[in-house]
Amino acid sequence: MSSQPVDPAKPPDNKCKFCAKFCSLSEVKCTNSACDTLLHGKCFDSIAKIVPIKKEEFRCKHCLGDGKVSSSSTDVLLLHKEIDCLTREKQLLEKYVSELEFSNTILKSKMPAVSSTLNSAVGFFRTRRW
Image 1 (cartoon, rainbow, N blue to C red):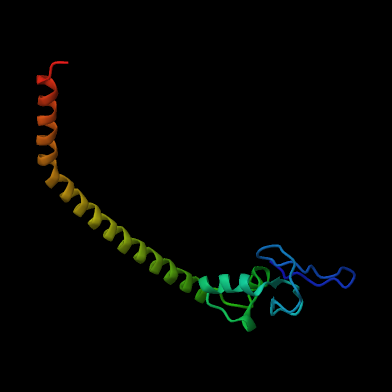
Image 2: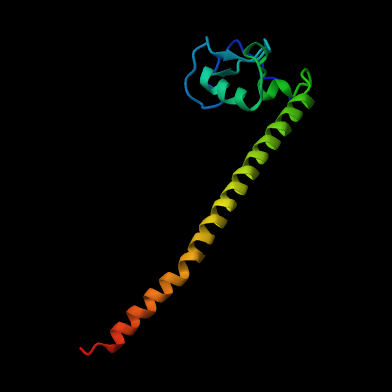
């Protein structure tokens, strides 16, 4: 893919490419001089949480496609993030299963008391004459 060339006859699109809202020119800009891609600081920060990148090194997806920046390191970082997320999810699920097993044990221990109370209540209503 090629970068988005700046057409002198057309004013630059001052919309954030992430949220599509108006963006001032003092926000984060793609480092390719021929590109007019802008992002809000908050939009960039949300991207930077997933893919660690400095504002001074930001390139939009169109300029990354030019092959000037190696994406293999980005792919590795994304895979590490995914592994971290899956590990956390596994730990949370194991904790949840453990809590469910504990709750199930408590409920099973209370079953004889509930069933004896239920049997005595049923017996009481059977002997009553209405």
